[in-house]
Amino acid sequence: METAEVETSPGIERQDWGAASQGSPPVLVLDEFLVRQELNSLMRYVLDRESAFQATRVINSHGGDQLDAQYRRSRVLFSIDEFERLFADRLSFFLPHVLWRLDMEPFPVSRIEIQLTASNHGEFFRQHIDNGSDSVSRRALTFVHFFYREPKPYSGGQLRVFDYPWPGQRTADAAAHVIEPQQNQIVFFQSNRLHEIFPVDCPSGEFADSRFTVNGWFHR
Image 1 (cartoon, rainbow, N blue to C red):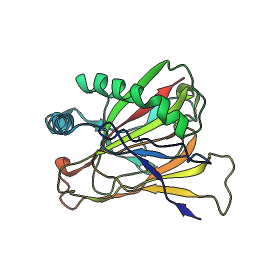
Image 2: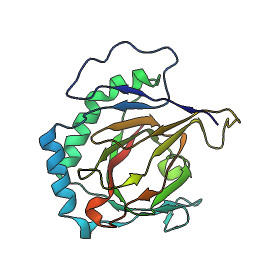
Image 3: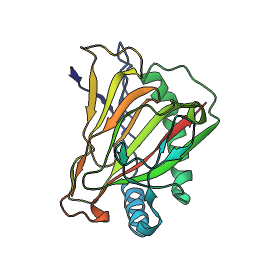
């Protein structure tokens, strides 16, 4: 299977977007999504709320959710208070550019679903799509914002996004795009793209050393 390079575009602090490339990529990465003060505040917020995180669950074939440690391991925080408005506004600002780069038709956004995920030693998420059941079928665009304590206290945790939806057009030479988590980057891709999170290697096992993401979805 081929592993392809991803396109990296500037974020909020660097506005030189340039021209759209031919054959728009299935993954778009923006650098420096938050300004430094916002990023520092977000980290303090997360570390103060360790006890509020809960084990992540997966959506089953009946549309309900359940724990499945063989399929997904991490912890999640569903309410992020004032940061929800910050992210919603920033994401909405970039949405036209993101849709253009990903060659997606504009769509009416019914809501932006936002959560915060912490992945620690040995935690992962196996191959899946984000809108594969009726309860989440309106998810159209996925985003993942990486942040962590510095110096980076873990390795692994890469996000791999495939060029095809599940269980659709998988071929032996289909490309996969592997994104190494980088501080303050945000990744966008269509919610029907098959993707996974590689296991995290965090020697300390401390919550503060986790692979953190603010992640979520634009719903049609």
